[in-house]
Each structure stands twice: as C-alpha cells, then as structure tokens.
Amino acid sequence: MSELILREVTKRYGDLEVVKDFSLEVDAGEFIVLVGPSGCGKSTTLRMIAGLEEITRGELIMRGRVVNDVPPKDRDVAMVFQSYALYPHMSVYENMAFGLRLRKLNGSEITRRVQEAARILGITSYLGRKPKALSGGQRQRVAMGRAIVRKPRYFLFDEPLSNLDAKLRGQMRTEIAKLHRRLGATSIYVTHDQVEAMTLADRIVVMKDGVIQQIGRPIELYRKPVNRFVAGFIGSPAMNFLKGTVEEGEVRGEGFQVPVEPLDVAGVTQGQEVILGLRPEAVRVDGTGVGTLEGRVEVREPLGAEAFVYLSVGEQQVVGRFAPDYEAREGDTIVFSVDPAACHVFDPRTESALRRNT
Image (tube, rainbow, N blue to C red; front, side, top):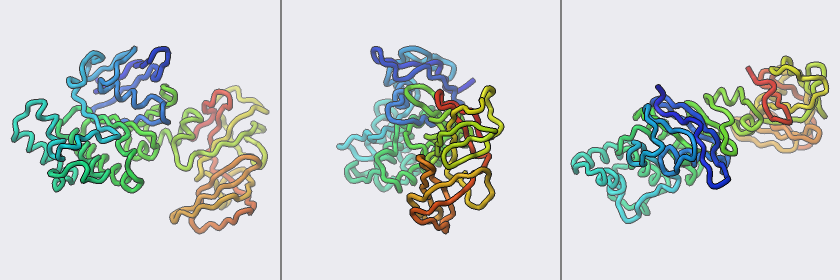
C-alpha cells in the first residue's frame, strides 16, 4: 500500500476551485516535487497535506488511514517554510528545541536530537546565535534542522529556497538531496523553479490552474510531455514552438520544413495546422539532422561551456544550444536542421501532444 494517497482532493474558496480533483499515490521514502507557476494550487495542496487547510472534497490517506479531520499535530509531518518562520528572540538551539519541548521530551533527548541535526546540517557552531546574526542560507538550515529533530514520517517543503541567491540555491539543493538520502523520509516539495524540480525529484507533478497536467520522472517529462504547457515549462531554455501545417509527412511553415512521421494520433490530415516543438539542443548546424530551418541571428549568448543563439525564423523565434566556439554574428542568416528524435507536435486547439519523442 502507498504511504500517502490523495484521492480526488479538491479545495474551494466559495465558488473558486483552486485545486481540482488532485489524485496522487506516494511510496514510502519517495521525493515528490509539485511544480507550476504562481497560483497553480501547489502550496494549497501542500497545506492540505499538512492539515493547515481543510479539504473541500476528496480523501487524504496516510498509512491506510483517512486523515481529513486529523489535526496537524497528529499527522507526523514537519514543514519547512519559504519565510524560515524562526523565532527572532530565541537562539538557534532554542528554535530547534522548541517543538520538542512542547512535546514534553526530556532535556537530554532534546539536546541529543538538536546536536545530531546541527551536525548533519553543519550548523553546530551557530547554536548560540540569534537568527538575525545568520545569513539566509544559515537560517534555512536552521529551519530544516527544526524539522529534522522531530523525526517526522513526512517532510513538507514550501518553496524553501526562494529567498536565496542563485549560488546558495544550488548549494542548498545539494544539501536537501543529501539530507533526503540520509533520512529516507517521504518528502513533498513545492517550487515554481523547474531546475529544482528536475534535480531533486523522484517524480514531478506539474500543475496548472489547480489541475495536474502530468506526473512522471524528470526525464520522462522532459522527453515525453503530454501537452504544450508541460513541454514549455520543463527545460531551460524553454522548448521552441513553431506554427505550421502538415504536408506530405512534414510540418512546414515560413522558413522551415521538418519531417515528423509518424504522428501518434490518428486522424491528422493534410493541411492541418499544428505546432512544432523543438528543444534548443535539437537544432543542428553540423548536417546530422533532418529538414531545414533558415533563420537570422538576433542575439548570441556565450555562456562558457555552451552558447545560446537566438534566431528569427520567419516571424517566429528559435533558440539553439550550440558549442561554445560556434561563431554567429548578429544579422547572419544560417540554415540548420533538427534532430528528428527530439521533435514534438502539438494540437494548437487542445495543446495536447500529437507526437512525442520516443
């Protein structure tokens, strides 16, 4: 039996549904990431799991027991917030020990747990400091330590790295991944950052407007998105989208023609309008691809290990990921091809995938 089950969970505020029929089964020790744009319902879902929001409809099942009406303190969860939520007048030690004192653990056990968590997180030397004397990354470690000392069955993370700079986010992603492997607890992590989702998750749940769009392993979502939203949200830079029509086994449009046979969905007809999806790395200038795309260079971004080149293809824009020594000057016109295995085709009306990379 799954460790955690959400069965058609819905959250409504008045007439507004912010989460709609959310269903998910989580295995013990799994790291699940809920990802999507702001306002998609991911944090609300997390808060329902924690018991901080009531469930309007559906069931939340933990270890075989429906817990819709179980108070947060009895759900065996620990939550790490975006804002750290530390008591400013307490030392790091006192912040980490506070919840254990409320649970009336004896002093020696509290000290043992706090010291163990501090050692794991590398904050032993900060135990006597107040939060105002810590950096953002150190405060986030303290917030995580406060969760660890409780030894919960479930860790819930609500955008914990959003307040950190890019370098610290990278470091803390590594720390969270190591921590998860070490503790083995079931973790649900909310973020709007697809890089965090791709690097941390066993499985990702992509949400939009309160509805699950796709659930799968990171590489599965990257290679086989079910619709245009998932394709555009997962991956950086985002997937290119070109409007065209199906003609003689190709998608053709102004400045391009790319073979896409076979399509996955029956009933695609000649002359049908579609959207061609291309990852930046699918763009080839070495002659190893298929089809042709002709574009004018707008911007070249050298990034050391690679270079992004932004091109105008007719009235549409394409970004390609090239070798760092690839030379392209603004205004140059280049003809390139694409990797056929990395082509995606979407229905412009439903935005569902008509052909997905296999």
